[in-house]
Image (cartoon, rainbow, N blue to C red; front, top):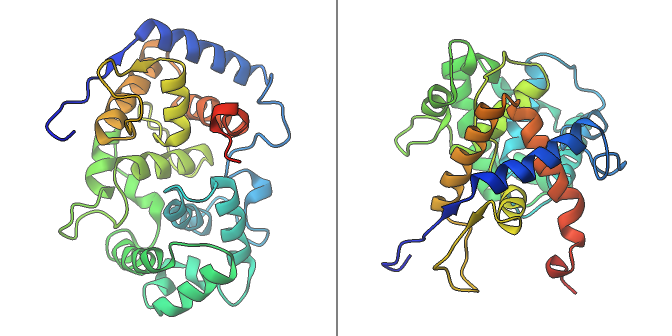
Length: 272
């Protein structure tokens, strides 16, 4: 950073201690996982009422939901608003990638605006271009990306935007993990035994606040949400899952839900 390397130290013993506790609470459905408000974004109550489950429509909705897994809006709220957009007969066609590829960006913009969603210019362009690529390469079905994929690296090669037309716009490491997580958790694709959980602000909060990773030379006010940090955390969570034989789905849920439920109420995180 400005010519200075960001030193990151991993504490594997602390990682085991923290994640063991969270997973134990999660599997026992103990606090905070027993709260009514502690639900994953794609919980059935947050999904479209009129969407067929278990097929291409379901997979396409989850694919489009990834555009709002970028911060700036709570994930649960994004799912609810996109569900409202799907359940509107006038905008439901936008979730059919065979039709979305020909959509007018203004129509997507208007649908997003009506549903209370932001980032409309960026999302509209990605929505249409990625629908075209999905139709050309996978017959409009996100599940087919994973037909012959054996691991995360192979999935990343197919999904990650390389800036030259390969992959999909807006998709990098985090979003690749995100779509794997959604499709796998909803039983739409076969299990990939090892993939890094999507590293976002929630995962970073838990990891840094509990000193699973530390930054000995960082300034007190330094921004630590950097590519170096997310890369270290991806490897750290894969390593933990591998050593303990833990499902990445369970690991993701345990860490993400904990932060989503509690971190906003921690005094240091409250904005007045």
